[in-house]
Length: 239
Image (cartoon, rainbow, N blue to C red; front, side, top):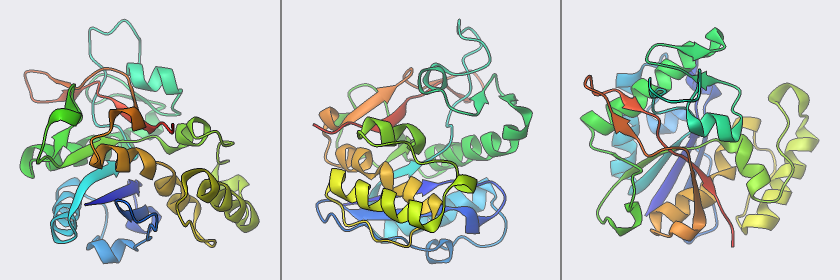
């Protein structure tokens, strides 16, 4: 079993951060987008096809994506965002279908939700639901939020990309190695570190270990148009 974690971007595949971990190995690798067959501009349909093909070929059972997979439930008492985003204070807020705040996040939000939709409905990846750990023979597609994962692992949050230098990234990689036991190499990009920090949650999902994850928000639900509403953000929880 393997876990694939991707720090998404909506404009260029070269901005994806990718981490791949064989469960139990403690040695993540960091493929390039080309290695996953990601070429051209990010489009949900072609991206989903490439990711599914890579995962099938490489025995990936858990796919983690840093981006929303559901819209806000229109009847939620929380305005302008999903419960999970309120709890974790995400910078982008996912509103009712077709809405996001700030508006500059809508392209990224729509791409992420469309990508989850393709993977779930066209390629039969399962969304995290109650009792997930009792279900066998599932391939799980999981929403992550790396910025919160750092604190949940007892570390300082990784600063924004524009505020980090190479020495800073190497220092955070070393700290992440110490906490998780993973062999995190120096020289990783900001996006690759963000993909790596949520790997403990992905490994816990692969092992069907509910004690290793924190589920934030509401269980996903579907509206009459098959839009996913709400949904959990999955974070690591170390014992």
